[in-house]
Amino acid sequence: MKTKDKNRQMRVINPGESLERFGDLEEFAIDVLVGLSEINKKLPSKYLYDAEGSRLFKEITRLMEYYPTECERETLENNKDRIVSHVADEPFNLVEFGSGDGQKTSLLLDHFLKLDLDFQYAPIDISQSAMVELFDDLDQKFPSLRVEGIVSEYFSGIRWLNNRSDRKNLVLFLGSNIGNFSHAEARIFLRNLWSCLNNGDLVLVGFDLKKDIEMLLKAYNDSEGVTAKFNLNILTRINRELGGQFDLSKFRHFGTYDVFTGAMESYLVSLERQEVFIEEIGRSFSFRPWEPIHVEYSYKYLQSDIEILAKETGFKVREHLHDSKKYFIDSIWEVKKTENNNSQG
Ligand SMILES: C[S@@+](CC[C@H](N)C(=O)[O-])C[C@H]1O[C@@H](n2cnc3c(N)ncnc32)[C@H](O)[C@@H]1O
Image (cartoon, rainbow, N blue to C red; front, side, top):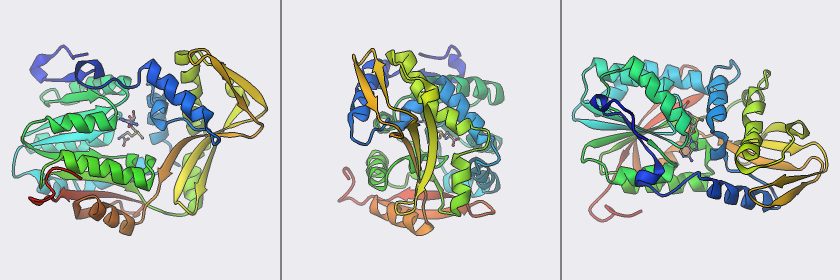
């Protein structure tokens, strides 16, 4: 799909046009089959973000209890000139993984445009509806902004990055999306990213920090039940897209913190013994009473963990930007490559 207004050079590239297939029904069905066949049942969190999931996530970001969005917004707002100081010397691509509604990024876009910096914005998100909404919003707010959006999975997005222009890249990975990866997955993701970037390119990664456990529990079990609706929506999506027969009243959301791994974990728990048929998969899945399905991780970090992660994956920390409460870090890293390790990680 391409946007109509070529003057503004906005376009959304569908996977069929340039990338491997992703998120189609066959792949969704396989992921559900594999996940629900495991002893510890699970569903990949990327499927939380259909149109309704993206809308519900937006609602979550406005909740008082869900502190990360406001902390990161404040960090970006108070440090926008510091961020500019890292990129202002040459033309650059502002690439963003998992851009969602782009609200926090708008702060930077606005500032960069006012300073007349020479840049192009390249948001990458698996949710087509989120991307379409983002485009509408950018159209209204920044008609002169050059945008090239891509609807894809992060890894396909990284590969796409490889073929991009020779301009310097600043890659944003906000919202503590990195926390959805285990530490091992985060290392693989960042090393892949490193191998697609050039020496001197920059990344700005948002990390949610370890903090009072009560506060974490409240953030992921909000009193209005929006997070519960957000997670249960994955079952509605299976019902709609794969002909599933999940009865949502027979599952509940449960968010907990693993003190050993430092991760908030979200589960959907079966409230009774039940069999659920999924038409596209052609079989039923059995649930015991109180049996969980894992749907999402949100790993929390210490500043020292962030520094180790950067070093292990080939980056040099330029600086850590904090909010005033020090609940969150936006960390700016520089890609470090020598002649010997230039091409592969
Ligand atoms: C937690 S939201 C964060 C949105 C925004 N960056 C923010 O900070 O508010 C995660 C976003 O990443 C996208 N996303 C999740 N998993 C993805 C994946 N595997 N590949 C690409 N995008 C993904 C979702 O569609 C969603 O818009």
